[in-house]
Image 1 (tube, rainbow, N blue to C red):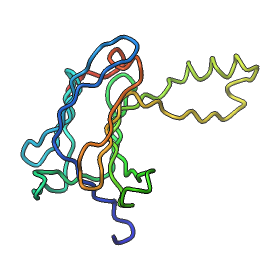
Image 2 (cartoon, rainbow, N blue to C red; image 1 turned 90 degrees about the vertical axis):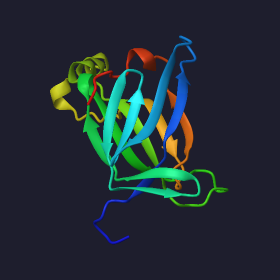
Image 3 (cartoon, rainbow, N blue to C red; image 1 turned 180 degrees about the vertical axis):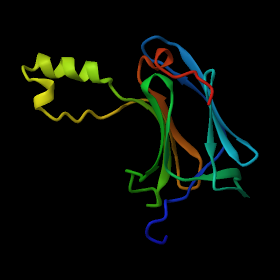
Image 4 (tube, helix red, strand yellow; image 1 turned 30 degrees about the vertical axis):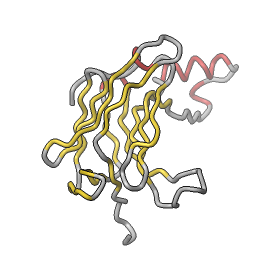
Length: 161
């Protein structure tokens, strides 16, 4: 791949039920193709992801997408990233992870810093985002893993974009 170009990743249509181990709530999730768009449905939320092409092979249809970040309501972010397999039995080709994360709001971070005895304006704090829901795809686009945090059904954005 030429330098400076974003990677192209395959994602295929899927339909799964993500279950919360704590509340026993279920959230229907799916990915589908609609023309030149990959449509991710999470509960009532519909998120349209731009593609760089649609293709088909012996495994069926797939969309080609680039890494991206889409800001959603309520501090949620839909992130699409390249993912490399941890398992050495898999080929080392990168796959794709689509996840919804929530970044803590500044007042929450400030309270945590104050609780540690520091003045928020006197320190730099890096807080990683919390993955609320994720979908991992193998290099050929098949969904290989999915899941969510225990309280995801109550913390997942439902705004249609």
